Amino acid sequence: MSSLLWTSLFAAALVASLATRAWLAMRQVRHVARHRDEVPASFAAALTLAAHQKAADYTLARSRLGQWQMAVGAVVLLGWTLFGGLDALNVAVRDATAARWGGLVYGVALVAAFTVIGSVLELPFELYSTFRLEQRFGFNRVTWKLWLADAAKSLAIGVVVGLPLLALVLWIMGAAGRFWWLGAWAAWMAIVLAAQVLVPTWIAPLFNRFEELQDASLVERIRALMARAGLAASGLFVMDGSRRSAHANAYFTGFGKARRVVFFDTLLARLAPAEVEAVLAHELGHFKLRHVTKRIAAMAAFTLVFFALLGWLSTRTWFFTGLGVGPNLGAPNDALALLLTLLVAPVFAVFATPLFSRWSRRDEFEADAYACAEASGSDLASALLKLHEDNASTLTPDPVYARFYYSHPPAVERLAALTRHTPIATAT
Ligand SMILES: [Zn+2]
Image 1 (cartoon, rainbow, N blue to C red):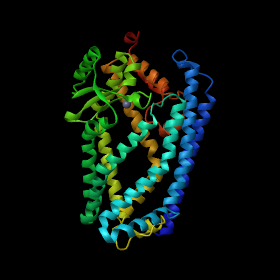
Image 2 (image 1 turned 30 degrees about the horizontal axis):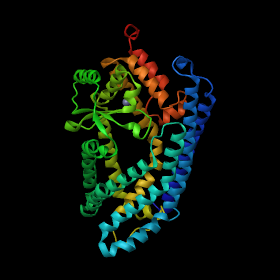
Image 3 (image 1 turned 180 degrees about the vertical axis):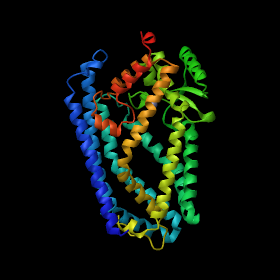
């Protein structure tokens, strides 16, 4: 391919992806605003008009922020690529490191510098989201002190854990010959699987406190549910999610001995024991129906394609020059190719979003059906309604927007399916 053709292809994909996303956002904004003044009939008994309007306003505010982020993101992407930002950074880092310390140090330094600059550019959005938007709707609990402590911890983890892993992957890329991408992929998968065990047990406790669930009757309920499902967990934990946000959640994580059930304190405070059980039954459903295994397998397949593509692209001059970057002559191009691929891949991946969303929504319906069989569908329905209200999720998304992006079915469809699964006799 000529580099001019590649530039044109990239530019066309960027314009098409931006147009698609802007069109969807516009649809969503219009639909939510149009339905702001009336609670949908099927929810009239469960939701006040004030709660419905808060959800609409929250959705609109997040959407506005998302559109700014999209616009700035596109400018930053063009700045890195066609306007020469990554090329300039590459030359500066290469001249400072490659001759004196070698190709590996240069590669790690380039990715680290890129990551730091990228994080700084995203900082205004993160701060605005936490301290203005979430604050305005009463969700934020993060203080400046906590935010700074979190940032310092994340940076430390990045240096202590991230840099050595990055060095390992770059080293394999440079040392493993023609099929390095297979070796790099295998190393990456090993890291991802290890993270399933290490993140819940070592990393997450650095940010939150996890305490054993104390409520004896709830513990008994959950143990009984897990026994019915044939799943064991090494612990039931309550996490102080309220330290950072009023949003509520529960999850089931890890595998083997590291497997644990985690409830946000915000969830336990809001839901009745039977509703907690139903929510957990849904999460267990994802495990029992092998959704989690399937997702890891799919992720493995996609990263393999990614590394194979990277292996091929890193040897094509047009891939670099077409994106405004001069490839290195006296130093390895692995880190540069990795960054360019990571920058460009999302532009093309946008168009696969509806497929993944659809797949995810199907899994959610299946997990709901599982929860209906193992716990109570009507409890799950009332829990979902409460969580929708507390999280200010809109009940009236634009149908096309929801088809494209939503990883969970819109509440109307989800509750309708739950009612189908729940025999009338047990619902009353
Ligand atoms: Zn789910």
